[in-house]
Image (cartoon, rainbow, N blue to C red):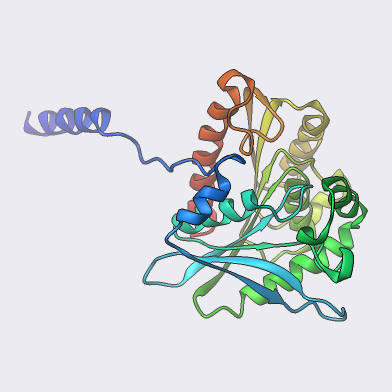
Length: 274
């Protein structure tokens, strides 16, 4: 009888207590302010890029914790290394991860600069679209190699990408077997012939109203299942492409999607990265 009573009380407590939650990252509109107010140490570093005459300008944010931290490489959108991507890195660091956000067009801008050196967003988008998958992989490998040298980091490394970066996060899993997790925010899936090379668990987080991206989900899912690979994914009703960046859009659907996706991302990271 006492055992049943104890179980009943425990059930009531579980129903009353809120589930663990993670605050949303900043939206595009609030990113600059969030960076200014962050208590964490963030800094730009120059990551050596072998066989090239330029380095990769990279934003690194350290978590406030007493032990070494798993690493998350943040792959930016088609808009380059923006305040929003830097704020995403800071948010990940607030949860105990060492976050690294490279500028993938470092050295390709006017005067050998990166995102900050371009005069227009159209020029940034065009330059990023011109990057080949092999060029992106080479840059990611350089950043991964750098991460492994950081004394405060563990050897557990994941990628998280948004839009173009989401596509590259999934694609990198086909090229680098020594990763622990890959998270894809509304990025297209690789062609199915590449999926056999994946050793990394993949999480996909998608908007319902994003057919360009979503038509690539089922072929990847079916092939990953056939191969016995891990590919979890969620599609959020009513949300549009870029819902984490544009949380105020689509009459609340983007905000709801961002809230759910951010929680599911952390559950996934805790399972495969921590």
